[in-house]
Image (cartoon, rainbow, N blue to C red):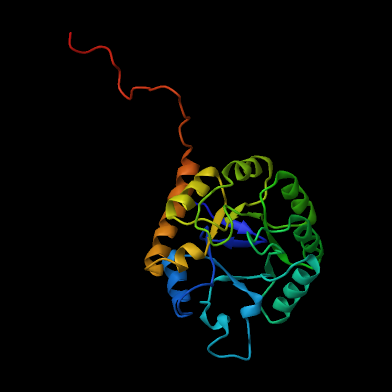
Length: 255
């Protein structure tokens, strides 16, 4: 079954995006990407240093994977725009994940500042994927501003708590036609499958893989879960019932 995902004109074979933070060593990154079968990898622009050899995170990004720099550390739209422009100038391409966060406790994204940054960067030709609090009206405004996809959080960053925003994400999926990539908070492969069964176009996972005892094995598990969840959504799950419904007839036997 042909089921590829296209964002910003780029065809992606995998619906699992991965991050590059929190690993015990950067040498794990290409192993995780391979095990997950990921097509997209995100990296904080502040970790990119073309002058460095060992510490430059780009040295550990395998070829053939779409690089999606992110504006982690930006507190407002102006800072996010500046970081995005620096990333493109450094040769990181035109994909950008907008992160605007000025909340130090829960690290919740600022949808208004994110919208402002999206408008500016989309007009400059960036493929903009905004990280956002799931909200239908914000989703519509981000689409109008030129976002290529939407990245609502499943739970606060790094919590591994799962799809706590499920109903809000479901509404976005029903009412918007942009690809929705569930980002942040997914802690188990089953939770990634849940997001895909809901109809998400993809998921982004970092902490759950990086913090696992065996990150490469966990990357494999997430890759399988994402494919299973997507296939389940395509298959069209049967409707839920409040009462039992026998699989076989209860009459016509023991005559």
